[in-house]
Image (cartoon, rainbow, N blue to C red; front, side, top):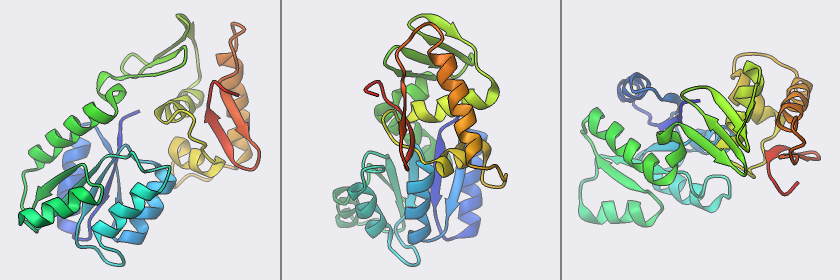
Length: 229
């Protein structure tokens, strides 16, 4: 599954430019137009990278950045801050408040994509290599192949997407609602118990060769990929 980029920007024309360039480069995107919506989407969708404008309605980009770094689920999420502020003191302020990189407007979309790829290479190398790993499990995103301890595992399309999401953040507990959003999409109505059915199928496939159970069920919470089940 391609990395998901959260674009936090309140200028529609600029949103369209950023969105178009990321999607043309093979990324998925989601958009928030104010600080509160940014925090909500970051928590619910768990993007691989956040493009964050400094000047936003509701909460400034600096406030959003600080809050993201406080939360367990987003404290390590890469953040690139976009701003019209070009003074060195502003750049220092952005970096000191949790941004990983800082780009001044107007900017080159190609440079933004290049810096995003570089940041993902440092923080999430599996996405750049097109492979995800956890314990004795390996997912080749390009070949759409999964193996455990060298043995091939065959999954249906939904189970594949579920495992992809769980592998992106091992040990992270995903609620059923979060899994529905990531695997089925926002605009499709599916009952939450459907997640349980596909998790059972995925667990059965992963444990087919007497492997240790890697999917942890959290009562009232959801599911996570965790070898310490």
